[in-house]
Length: 119
Image 1 (cartoon, rainbow, N blue to C red):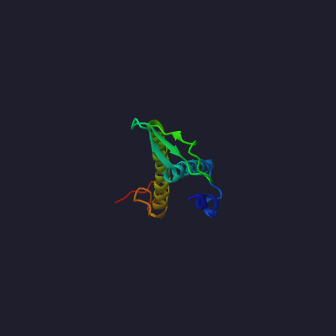
Image 2: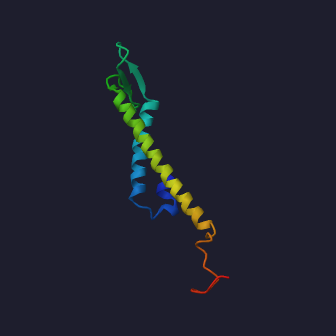
Image 3: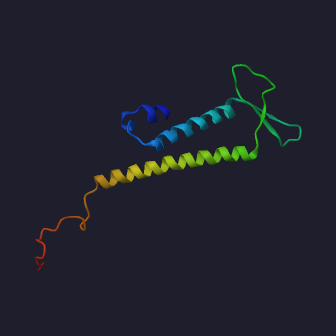
């Protein structure tokens, strides 16, 4: 996705909207990688969860607590990013459809001169 958004010639003139999408994607991808490749621990209380993110070296002292609020916040960020991408796709598809469709009868120029009567 990053290569597509940053390198594709058709995206060279895109607005800051795309820069923001790329940044959010990279941030979320980093969180996702930490969650997917890290080591998870549960405290003896059965409620507190810790994550030891994958590093070049594993240190058992680098665990951080992961709260439900944090997890829900990350999911919300994914939802927002997905919504922005879907909205953009819908807008592009609509623009393409409008460009490709023939004008409706209301939009077509009248074969009659202005002011001429239709009999």
